[in-house]
Structures are given as structure tokens and as C-alpha cells.
Length: 103
Image 1 (cartoon, rainbow, N blue to C red):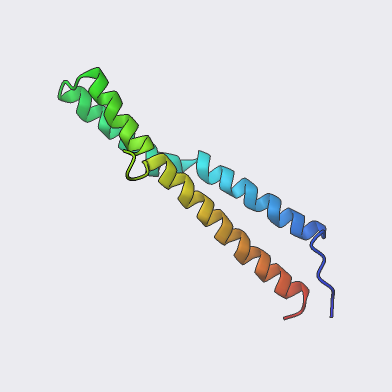
Image 2: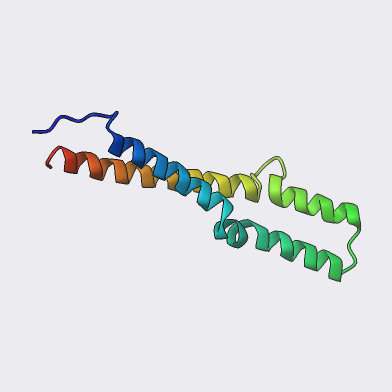
């Protein structure tokens, strides 16, 4: 039975792939769909209804950063991406280890 080696280049590659995947999820279309679109909607409504500048800034701040009792969209989105990245890494790593060990 082969011996598991956590320093094997294959496992380092899995880690690097997982990191890059998380970065891509933070920077690509997920930001548009899960974060930016709502900000644009807030801006559109505020501009079309003649909202005061400071009120619009306050609304955007609450949306992005939360209101002190619940997290904002940015924290929720980053948390979801981190959770997804860890889950993906764990599944890939477990699958690769079991294959390497012949299970």
C-alpha cells in the first residue's frame, strides 16, 4: 500500500488550485451576481427618487457592512466563498488521498 506524503507535489498543487479558485470566485462573476447588482439597484432607486446623498451613502454602507446586528453583504459573500473553497478543497484532497492509498 502506498504511503501518504502531504509534501507530495500533487497535494501542493491541490492547495494552489484551491487558493486560485477562491480568488477567482471573489473577483469574477460571483461579485457581479451576489454583490454589485444590489449596489447598482440601490444607486438606481436612490437617484431616480431623488434621495439625499448622505442617505444613499448610509444605505450603501448598511448593505455592504451591515447594521451592527447583522452582517453586510460583503461579509456574507466572502464567508460563503471561503466556506465553498474549504469544502471544495476538502473534497478534492480526500478524493486524491483515497486514490493514492488505493481505497
